[in-house]
Amino acid sequence: MKSRSVPQDEAWRPKLSRIEDPIAEDCWEYVTPKGQKRFSRLMVGRPVHYPEHQLWYCPVLIEGYTQPRIKPIFGMGPVDSLMNAMTFVRTFFEENSEVLPGAKPAGTQRSRPAASRKRSTPRRKSRSV
Image (tube, rainbow, N blue to C red; front, side, top):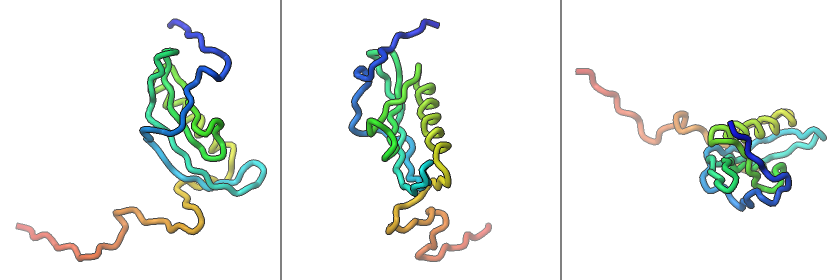
C-alpha cells in the first residue's frame, strides 16, 4: 500500500464550526484528573471524505476538551476514521474518573425511556380467535 504524505503543520486541516451529520451524541458527568467535577457534551459526526489529502475524518466535539472546539479525527477510509474518533473518545473516558454517560446538567430532569413511560390511556387487551 502506498504511503501518503501529510503536512506536519495544522494549517491543512479543515476548520470546522459545526457537526453537520452527528451519528452519536451524549452528555457525560465526570471527575478530571485534577479532581474537578465536570459536565461535557460529546458529539461524533459521520465520516467525511477529504479528497485534498485522500483521507477521511470524523468531526468530534468534547466540550471543554477538544481544541479546536470541533476536532477532525483522520483515517485512511471512513471506517478507519470512525475507529480513530472512537479511540479518541475512549482516551478521554480513560483519562477521567467516575464517568457517568447520559448525564443531565443540574436543573434538568432526566426523562424516562419511551418504553417505561406510563400510558395515559389503558391498553386494550387483544382477543384470541
